[in-house]
Length: 109
Image 1 (cartoon, rainbow, N blue to C red):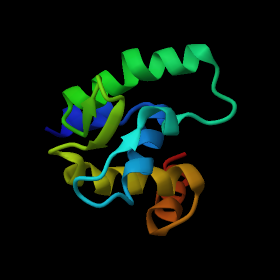
Image 2: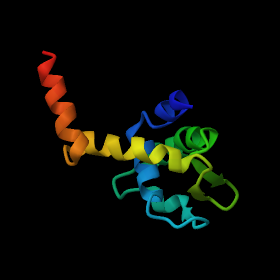
Image 3: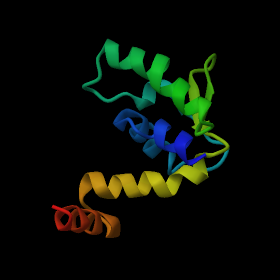
Image 4: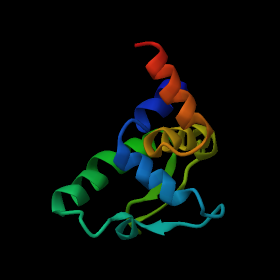
């Protein structure tokens, strides 16, 4: 299970998608078009639909209704939240895990 989660969350685009789902109440969904940022081009949109969303759906992190072009939290979304939050702390340098990761990285050098 952990390998599946880590693989699915290895890409920053997939972590961004999961982060946008985090505040949703159970049963609520987002339009796939709402996942795009202003700077996303056609290639980004294709990758989201053909690479990232399928990988997240396969890992049961998102429930993706392809016909309605909507996503919601998947069956294993809650299991991924601690990893998502830890990744965010490391990426942003904000939070309890961020400083510890930086310190341990420097200590080993």
